[in-house]
Image 1 (cartoon, rainbow, N blue to C red):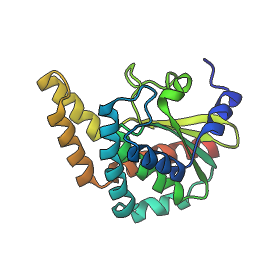
Image 2: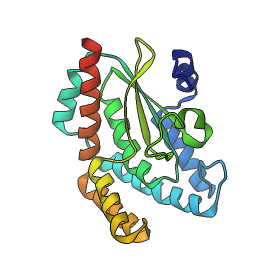
Image 3: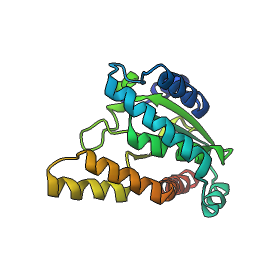
Amino acid sequence: MAITGEFLKEFISKGISYESYRNLIDTLQLEGRSTAVEDTEERAHYTSLNVKRMDRIDKKVDLLQTINLRLLELSGNYTFLLLAESWCADASQIVPVIAKIAANSYQINLKILLRDENLGLMDEFLSNGGRAIPKLLIIDRDEDRIVGEWGARPQEAVEMVKAYKAEHGKIDENFKIGLQKWYNKNKGIAIQEEILEVLELVDEKVLA
């Protein structure tokens, strides 16, 4: 499918703010549900865990001062179109950090979409053939085109997954717990730095 301006506008118009996303997830969690199209008890359970993780990040994780300074140097105007789901553990750690980046720049407008309700877009941006989330698409608002992407995990976490699969054959609950501990210890720094690196490269091309 061609990624045209009209195609993008359709999805951007459906996107919601981080505040609305949190309100949706909080409400579903209280009802014992999740954002999944095919809801399950397991996904509701993970949604409940993820609400606690997101609450902690919202309160305790701040952007690095160096990141704030770099945001001030941006020249272009961008939409961050972010695909996520309430039950995704990686999304619970990453989406709040991306929201903080967007909130600290007048030039970035964040819109969040639920992956399973927008597979037409998701399937254009697979990771190793899979619908891995969260997936961030960076859109030049002046030209209505995608100029960058990031996700679904920071590179160090990607390498951790590869190493664990090579040794154990698959990802299990043990690894998932270890990965969450890594996210907590890193405090969103890897996410901030990697996304800003992509954004700065994009910004240079916009200026060229």
